[in-house]
Length: 315
Image (cartoon, rainbow, N blue to C red; front, side, top):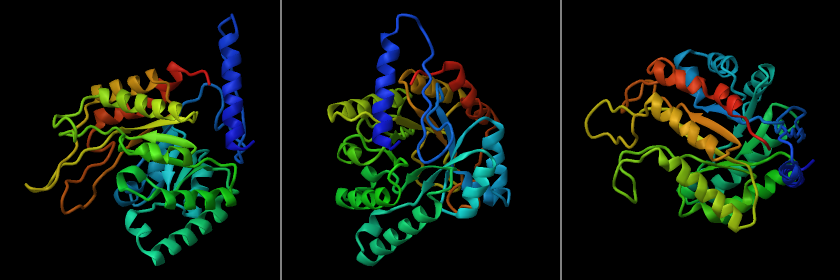
């Protein structure tokens, strides 16, 4: 079943559930090219960004994968390395494969050609691996001001090589993201809490999560697009080593994190990822990594999969 048909099928089943006079749990089991329960039942997908930092701290990414598996997460963000994808598969996990495009690359004809060549190679090499959950060719295209024409070109290439697996991205600029929405299959936002908001000039509050989720759902509805909506929550710290280093982000408390999870679940998201961004041996920022440097925050983060199961979801 291709992704468009999948969405139509989900909508039809959801309507049938609503019409039923008796409260029941409607379970939808569908398959993409991956023969597993990617979109099954009341499953809200959960996962971690930033596992590459564990290769620096632990000298192995295996420890990071163990944290994912042991705590009930099912998704990791991974690069296009074939061996790493295979490790993910053996753990029974799924990877969103990042093939990171930068604006600078789009501005240089040679670099752009090389990017497309590498993208094609990665998709062809990995598309038959059932651990590949989605392709993630560009992060925050709105914030980077990636030309829409370039996005169209890379999406067309991926779909020509693997027409049934979804394409994922994350947005971070509400006033700019609308023009990119038609081209991605799974839509995510990352409402990280900054110390000084660009529009308000004041520290962000956790309400930013609901504001962004409601806006992107409203924008999708306006365009008559119905797509899975995910959120990436703030699970990291920037602690400068010396004065004068940029320090944009708030330190998120466990209570704030739990409240943001509750908000995301209230907004009926399809997936929740946590950015566990870390610094190891950085000249500008102090070493920081979960779970080592904030065990209490890690306890809140690791509780996420259990919390989503408790809350449940009718698809």
